[in-house]
Image (cartoon, rainbow, N blue to C red; front, side, top):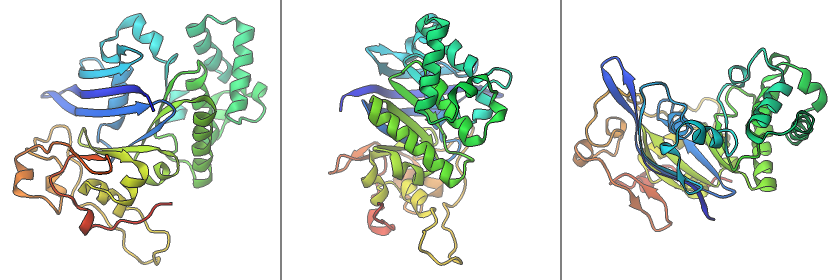
Length: 330
């Protein structure tokens, strides 16, 4: 598949009390046409900030370096109107909390049609027809009634579908979905996953899906990139990543998942320690304080990426595969 987005050496610094701190440190990833790329990692790993930087949505004082090629142009170099023409129209984003991302005093109809008319100069009646059509696509009951309603009148799952509709109203080429299933019950999560997968298959949409839930990615992603402390530390095809992780951090995330067939009293496995904050200064591999496979070189040298025989890339001098649990993921 042809790459639609190529990000190289993404580095993001935010202004802190004691000066700038690095929150994303040289992240690389590629999104292909019609693909769902899952970006996984614990909270604070830099997943969301990486995506916000592509759309110029970082706070004042942020410094962004690197390249993000989309449609023959570098997103990180765009400013003003050029960036607004891409944001929303060509790249849509579903934010993590639909209750706060949807304006509580704006009707769903206005949220959809105002966004559409700004980017396409579409007439009001035509924009309304497009809004109804999109609400039908995301399986909202009574689309015409939805246009007159406010966000608080819908359940969490329905609000998430509405947020997806707002992001897709201009028919973008890429959808960035930030934790679209967080705080939803299992059946609603499954509905959102099916919706995104169906939209991808029917429209050729490319999706960047940010989540900490590897279980969700196992059901929808084509490839997975795992982030830790601002860096992508492993990337590859979903089945390879979930069956046989090659980075100790990825292996730890998978081992921490509860096994559906384990006895009820089986203790959950955890990764020792806690993720570092952006203010922590850690030499070498940033995961080495928590890694049970750490070597002396891990404490002094930043590991470079290794390409495995299956095409997977991981940044670690140690292959944990022989010593970790590797299970077949359906």
